[in-house]
Amino acid sequence: MKKVLIADDHSIVRLGASVIIQGAYKDVEITHATTYNEILDHLKSNRFDLLLLDINMPGGNNIKAIKELLAAQSDLKILVFSSYDENIYALRYIEAGAVGYLNKNTAMDELAVAIQHIQDRGKYMSETVKDLYVQKLISNKSNLQMSNPLYKLSNREMDVAKHLISGQGILDVSALLNLSSSTVSTYKSRIFEKLQVNNIPELIELFKLHAVE
Image (tube, rainbow, N blue to C red; front, side, top):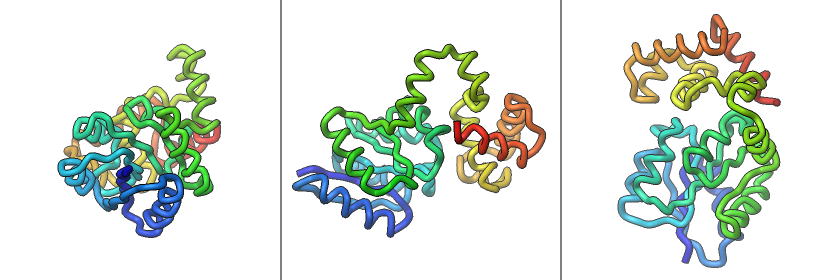
């Protein structure tokens, strides 16, 4: 029997994903988690074949969560299932250890395709992510940063930036990422300097511009 953990704080998403997963596996046991801490609790007491992970959920909205989850179960296959743009975030999460990244705006049928790819090949990449991966392979770091300045940001800076562009303030980001407000302010200053923007509206426009590349 396959064991799958669905981690998402929206019940309708968990329900829809459950239906797809039950169709993908002949014999499957599905467990639900609504917070990052619940995921960790489940991993302490059970071994799972697949974790379907929403990265925008309480406690787990940072890239380092992937490594923490793999530390809890090293052979866990993590498929990130997120509303965040794959053009910006997918490669970072895959490089961190996820076996795939699927945007929630994709038709639910693609979830079945992703699961089948993971069963057969161990990984899943959409055509968009494949193109990004090829681009990264054939480009050196400086060329990549010139074509998309968001690659100048570290993973931690990306974590901070994505919350800033969603309308979160310094104190909000501090609580979400478990960082001091002064540390978040420092990250914010670095982000603005690296991307050569002066305010949040300019940061939002830059993210919009490079999300469609």
